[in-house]
Length: 98
Image (cartoon, rainbow, N blue to C red):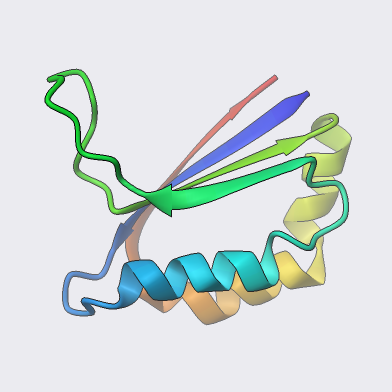
C-alpha cells in the first residue's frame, strides 16, 4: 500500500473555500483509477496539544503501490483539480509513505 496525505490551508478570504475544495476533491480525485481508499474532510478539533489544528482540509488517498500514485499525479482529472481548485488554498503540504 502507498498513502498520499495532503493538508490544505484554505484562503481565509473565502469562507466557502473548505466546502468548495471538498467538492472538487470528490469530483476530480475520487474517480481516478488506482485510488483504493479516498477520505477527505475538515480538520477535527482536539484538546491534545500534539494535534495540528492550523489547517482546514485534509485528503488521504491510498493506492496499491507507488506506481499507481505516480500515475495519479499525471492523470488529467488530477491536473484539472489543481487547475480549478488551487485558488482555494494558500498552502499545501504532502506526506507520502509506503
